[in-house]
Length: 152
Image (cartoon, rainbow, N blue to C red; front, side, top):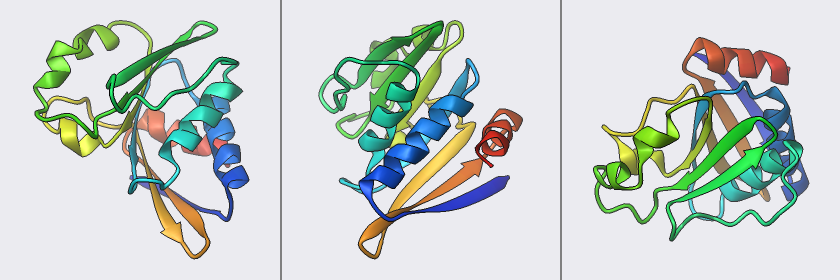
């Protein structure tokens, strides 16, 4: 596993990291986003999507569980599993269909999908650090390591 830690002193730094991640993404990747409520997960996703050219609204999929974005040739799925009662519910929302073909999965609260959700290529842990945040990025696969190399 390869790890990178970045200070995020303000929301602009979180947005900058999101934009850099967007620029570094391959066509297919699974990113697990961890952090407490308000840690900046959706802010990071919004900036990533903007970097890929998405101009519309970016809503947190807290109630819908998944929002789909077409960004050029890429399909990005933003999942928020906070309200998931049972990991098996992922089958009902069509998780297998989301994984059919090139796609990027950005998953908030991935621990709630344990046993059903695909393993992460990259884990992003956002934590409160003083007045700002800190991001720890853990590459779990070679694709994840490639993303970290592109961020350097």
